[in-house]
Length: 107
Image (tube, rainbow, N blue to C red; front, side):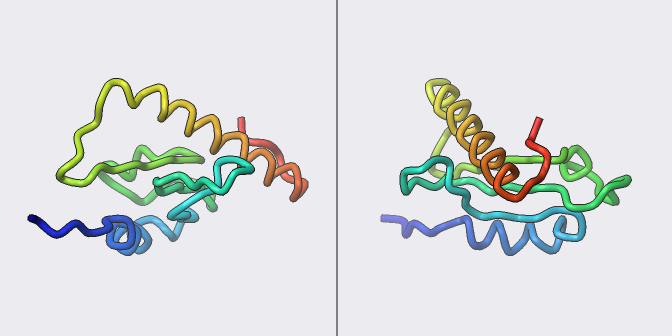
C-alpha cells in the first residue's frame, strides 16, 4: 500500500516565497463558529499595484481560495455545492473579522 502524506505543508512552503511579497498566506481558516476548518489555502492581497508574477499567479485577485487534490483524489461534480458552501463560510468569516477590526467588508 502506498504511503499517504499531507500535501499542505509542502504546498504552503513552496507557495510562500512565490507570493508572500504581495499576499498573506493562510494554510487553514475557520469557516464558522463550529470547530471546522477549510482544507484550503487562502491568499489575501496585502499590497496594491501591478503584480510581478507570471503564469497562474498573475491572475490572483484580492482574495483567493486554493484547493488542490492529491494524486489519488479526483474532483467530482457533486462536490461543487460543498465548495460553494465553503466559499460562503469563508466569506462570512472574513466579513466578521473585518467588522471586529473596523475594516471594510469583503465585497
